[in-house]
Length: 168
Image (cartoon, rainbow, N blue to C red):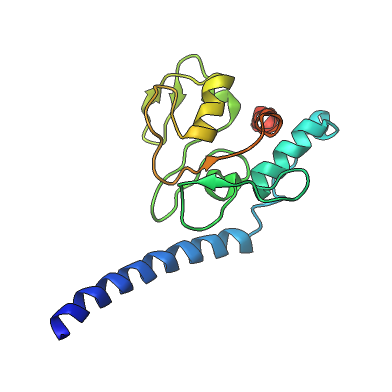
C-alpha cells in the first residue's frame, strides 16, 4: 500500500509546486501592474481599433468585457502582457522566455529576432493571425507550449494587430 501511495504523493507535490510557481509569477506580475503601464501613443489613442487591441492585449477580454476563449497554453488564464510585457518586448519567467512581439520585430525583413539571438522568417498579418489563433509560427512550425491558441473574431484579431503596430 505504501509503495503505491508514495509515487502518487510525489507527483501531487510536483504538480502543486509548478502551480505555485505559476501563481507567484502571476501575482507578482499583477501586483506590479502590467495592465495599464503602457501608454498608447497620442496619435493612436483615439483609434477605437487600437483601444480595443490594447484591451485584448492587457486583459484578454473583448470590447464587451467577455473573456476571450483559448485552447492550450499556460494552465492559468493570462493576457498577452503577462508573458510579453507591457511594451511587447518579451520577458523571462521561471519556465520560459517570451519573444519580442512588437510589430517592427515580428515583420523585420531581416527576420524576427528570437530571445536566443537567432532569426526566423518575418511574419506578415496573415501568418501573425495564424500564430495567435493556431499556434503556428512564420515557418509553419508549432509555437512553444506556453502560447495559447486564442479563439477571437476577425475584428478583434485586426484590432490586436493594430495595437501591436503601436508598440515600440
